[in-house]
Length: 182
Image (spheres, one colour):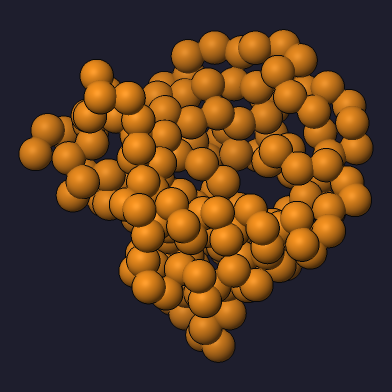
């Protein structure tokens, strides 16, 4: 991986008024990841309408200030990755947020994009006053190493928690991370 390729990735938070304009580009990322075997709530075959409908809902959540949507873009401003911070939680959890749908195009992997997205989500969570973050991932997947390197603490594994896109059962590992108080 050359340094220029890494340096040409910009990670940024989408404003509520622009999130809906990114639906198609985000649908491309989701479809690519699911077709690559990622267990991220969707089954094969995933249709463009299914993917676009999901992202339209995310954009509505951004507009309602219920979630934060981050994207990683390459030098041509093509979306190559994304992650969300879900901030709309019960009233007894104002200090907490969930990290969701950390996705990177298969062709863009192994370039540090996921690491940059996770660092950006930490920064956004800190600014939003969140001190406890929670996420889950497929047990034994590449993402587990990423999260552990980024300081996430493993809580435990739930066997047969979800399905892979092909219908096979998979275990899910839960993680948490404490951030400093604002």
